[in-house]
Length: 223
Length: 223
Image (cartoon, helix red, strand yellow):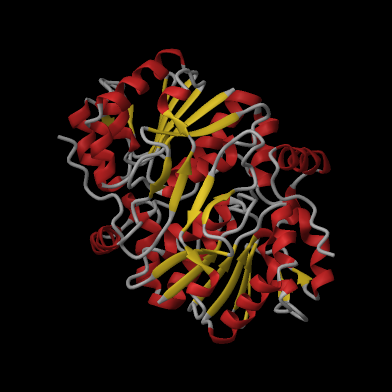
């Protein structure tokens, strides 16, 4: 089972690494980070206050036919990928033969730019929810949304939940339950403020401010 | 506020990237991945079936006095760090002036090798819990355990919960709540199998097998 995770400049690291930590433990899975230009890929917070970069060894074209495609979100870098015909063509071709085509956070807009979300329900980071209509999708406030073989996950941390679902679909509940235990995923967030539907306007404003300060994804205007 | 995350060969990526995604959004935080040898740092699953590597730009000595130190876990690489006098000396010196000295997963054994857990309660990945006594600590089955300024978190995903706690202690509940919303951390795991205390022996055996297959952390024998 070949799994391709798209890496690109100013991606959000946890969007990719959360699912990676689950998917790489599926027996016989080969998970590759693929990029238009392999090498050190800066994350969205790189250069602001922090220095995280992910190393991608493979080119897009090295993995033309992945069984699972995962597109993470990011900040302005996401919009650049949305304009890259090379990346979109790779994604469309990969989707033609994939078992699962998935996104996390604003990665949904890259699926959308490739024309894959037209007429579908989908989800994305809450701060970008109003823009999904621009790629022909209807926003749904769920942790992840499955439409056929396309799955879109909500913001950043939601990719972990989605990856466990995929592991269950791929290898059975027993496998997915074991992987959940392997990463000791028994979340106990210190607050109940992870869902925008339950957040106050003031909290949402503050969250947007911290996202912008860190150079992370914000309101996406995909056109 | 200077935050140092130790990067080392065969570390577990999510141990570091989960907390990173929270901590890098604390206003005025500077988060640096530091390594004995900067460059592309392979994760514990690299070379087995996958190719994730993290790029660390800074040397340990570039950040001698971080306010927060975070030590991720890993597989056999963790044991090598436990034998590195250079890394342990850096950690001891950093701890002398830190506000918080923290670990995720088997990173606790590196704190232990530096002598920092002697006589304390601590936690680690469940699969390595029996070995904490060898570094003088008493295992506690909690998501994270605070003892003064030392915080140890449980396996892999637990670092996210710990990082939100630290954000709250550092910048107040309002900030931490906003950061939880920023990463849309409203976890909805598809199963209730993330805690070993509720797992069957068969599930624990399978989880251990998948961990080993992926080259990840397993039973640590720190001596």
